[in-house]
Length: 473
Image (tube, rainbow, N blue to C red; front, side, top):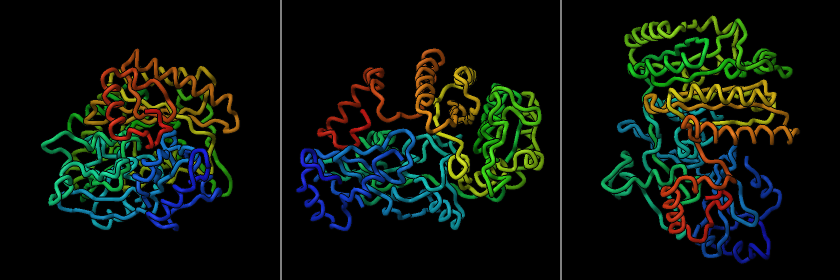
């Protein structure tokens, strides 16, 4: 909490110290600096009474401007609320606090013979936060949403339990009840309606056997048709379509650990794959009994041929792209996040994404639109991956690039191009954003009655607008 007389009276600092203890409150400038950018719960009633802005933060690795603190406000740091309160192996759910990391969660689940939705985010990120930005995870082909129930505190201090957990004597095993689904109200609200202090999330048993089927295609449209077909036949648990530059990025630093290594192909035209690399590789996760896996692999091979593709033996790809195979082994075989060298020690620039969802037919048009538009402004490294949600009813598409972090002018040009892409993709192809982004204005105004009702709800729940006010809601 930063001491500024005009915005933040010292009396608030003293009051917080009395309420929760001085050891849990700080106004140290060095510590405050670490919270001032996008990268022990306190009583909300105090902040609400003084109209002090509050920003909840767990890992602090948001890349969308969704948790940028306000100057003179309070940051609620949940890193020490990191308990796994329950792993229910009967009803297949777990109750976790917001500070639990994927690394901690996946390890604890494996000891019980279970797993969870795994995103492409690093293992240091938090499941509860990630899941609330639905959809997310490696099992979203079938279950779009990981959240079952939530415990939420709103500004006036009221504690809300959603789902079946709303009944004092009932376990948090069920999302929907006899009244409206308030769990969904807090999902995708980005900390603007309440502070989540724990949640019940879906978990899944680790089956007897699993397979990672690799299928190569020369174009994105054929990859989408393949994915739709096998999902419709109830074969995979999860599929991801990777373009050749995306799966090649996993080879950064794999071949040389003493010095940075970046595959030279990453600086070629992303629309033309090298002769020895498939344009797209579809990774298909299948699990169950061993006998079923044998049949499922045969079906994948049959369907791949139907759309002009072929099954790639793992050993063949391991010779060309060892990093990709290493990553997919972690992601699918061990149910944990792979090392993401391209965004850490051997980073190749500032990460800038364009992310939408569309119908299967329209997402093919979006892929071409996005690649052509970004290549037109001189970009070479353009990685994308795409995956189906909800049995293929919606297709997720994320394309991202890495540019010189010091070249602010070029970054601005890319972001302006992406902004135009969002408008064109929606108006021409019905593609919608996957999530909101911080500091954007005018989005709710475009949504008619939906936006109007959401504003009214915000005014009722948080009349003083203290919760994450930097996210224009």
